[in-house]
Every structure is written in structure tokens, then in C-alpha cells.
Length: 293
Image (cartoon, rainbow, N blue to C red; front, side, top):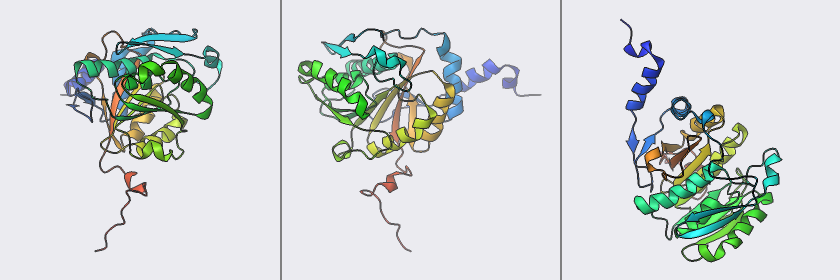
């Protein structure tokens, strides 16, 4: 007699889903579904969310010069560079749904679950237009928005455009940071309480550099929030496989996302560095020589 699961592939997926491990990770105030296997998580995303059939750009208009978004009692004005969409490898000149989903998650989690950002140090990676960092600042965080040198002009413009609103609760600044390069001392000393990023997992070639930067920016006390467009299952699986070596990862459930700003095309994750992460010992400030016995 064979295993009953073998009778139906869908039943097998459903049975595995029922065994989900839920836990709190870092400072995120709701339980997340723990990711234990890269291939399984990717399979579940594409099986249950069916991102291919979902509408693209539900919350943004990439052809417009400006996105207006209400957040934290303010209206943010986010400038875009629509012409950059046609430039290969450049995604940061316009907004994507994942950025809006993450930004509104911060607001929703603060309002409904008590996420505390006030006075916290927050770094945004691959900030692009800077929406997520702006919302974090509205919630009281001291935010450093980072991106490559050629993206900083637009990013700084958006910080300046919204400076009055941002300064009411927190602070926002802009710095250059290319993944894989050594971060400036001001970014890592002290290490941030939060790292946020949206739409940064888009190419297998950049995954190692992204993870190197995440490891350098984090300790086990840092909470990382990532959201991304579900475009390529192979790229996402590659990210999970490498990230699980050093981070605990949990997927934010749809019930904990902002009810008006969630999409089957977007997934959001919480990451926390494992205490025994192999690259903690590569940091010259924390490395200890092995004891002789």
C-alpha cells in the first residue's frame, strides 16, 4: 500500500501547507510562516498565489512622473523617471507594487500590531524612488536610504520634496551603497535596527552581493523586511537557498498585510541573522581568535 500523498500532487502540497511552522521573528509584531526549504517555499508561492495571472502594477503607474500616496496622515509625492523603464537592468527609476506593499505594511503593522519604528535606525537598500524609507521616517525612524551613485539624484529629490512631512517624526538621508562594497562607517556604526528593501531580488548574479551587504548590515538584533515581485521562480529559489545559510526567514501572511495594498504578485519576508552566522566572524570588529586547548 503506497503513501496516500502519492495519489494526488495537490493533496501533497495541501498536507505540507498544514504543517507550516509559525513564529515571531525579530521586531516584526506578527507571526510569520517560517521558510525551511528553498524549493518548497518557491513551489508553494507559485502554486497558491499564481502570480502569473495576477494583475501587474495594481498600485502604481510607471508612465507618470509622480506617484501620490497617503500614509501616516500625510500625502507623499514620489517623483519617477518613466524613461528609465526601457534601460536594461535599471528598475529604481519608477515605483513597483512591491514598494507600495512594503511601505503600507510598515504603516499597517504600526497601527494594528504596534510595530515600533520611532527612534530606530533604519537602512533602505536599493531605495530607488525612496517610498518605503519615506514611510519609515513618517513613523519616526532615522532612515538612511541607499542606492547606486546614478540613482541618488532622484532619491534625494524625493527626500527634499517630502522633507517637511518627514521631519515631523523622523529623519531621512541619502547615501551611496553598492551591494558587495564595504558600507560607510556611518551606515554600520551602529548597526541598524531595521533594514528594508523592495524589488531587490531580480537577478541571480546580484544575489551574492545583496546577501553580503545584508550580512554586513545586520546582527541577530536587526530585523530585515523584504518585499518583491514574483517574476522568476529560479531567482527567488536561488536567494532562499543562499540566504537560509545565514538567516532565519519567514513569510508575512496575507492577513497581516495592509488589506487594501496586497497582491498575489508580491511576497513579503522577515529575515533575522542566525546567531552562529558564518560571516559574523569575518567582521574584524567582532572576530575572536579561537582559544587554544
